[in-house]
Image (tube, rainbow, N blue to C red):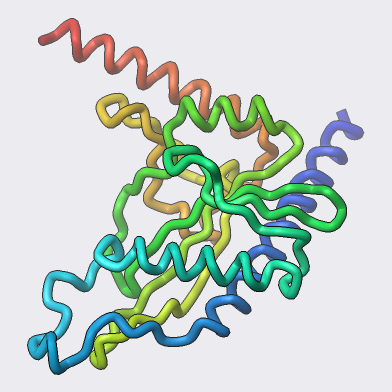
Length: 221
């Protein structure tokens, strides 16, 4: 039992070390990008109004992040950084280390000082398939915090990286395509350090609970 706990703590330490490295790399990356011009007070004289939302500019930001990661991958210490083949998978980027180890990262946006919301992380079924296919790799959520500035530029002011397996509020929505959802995935202080195996046990329970809720809802219609 002591040996198992020692191995568990070593695994969690390895995940945390990788998490910190990825977060430091993304922090370096956004510092080099700087302010991003989107419009100007001349053509938007009344400012951002309702467009000051992450989804408004996210596709542009995603491409900026992608191109800069590809350009600076070796400078950041990776053999390569590749975009995912599919846009509907559980990760957006594959980070290949010189050791041959691969880290997978799903990127999301958050507006500076925005409200706390329960957001979709990924389809739970896709997560189960991912951890089955890549049992020795880790999956992370990288959140880029966006500041909408008065000069009609945006600034990525912060990047946080959290292991999906550490999400504290694991919940699978039975009526929303079976998505894993979380309101606290951006808050490292609330995270629960787990191994992938421990997370899968919890996720399987939540998936089965969602299936039962869905069945009960259909029977009541």
